[in-house]
Image: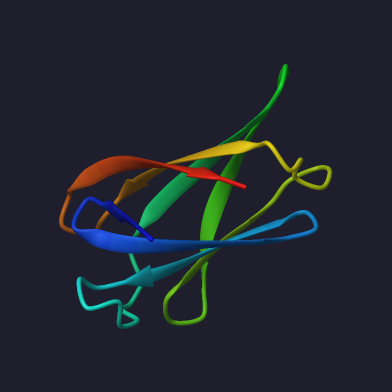
Length: 92
């Protein structure tokens, strides 16, 4: 779980899907409505940028072209409806 712009993100990956759960400081789900975000997936020399979209109540999701490598680094850039922005880095 990483703190980004006042919200916490929990990262899960499955195949080509990136899923980020949006949580508060107590790690309880909070609304992702109005959040804009993108992810940069870097594995070796390969780089891919993905726009994350709000799904359900507290989920941001994106699809990459091919399964995420085991050593990949995922950098998320996020902006909240309140105008706060930030970045977090995750390792697969």
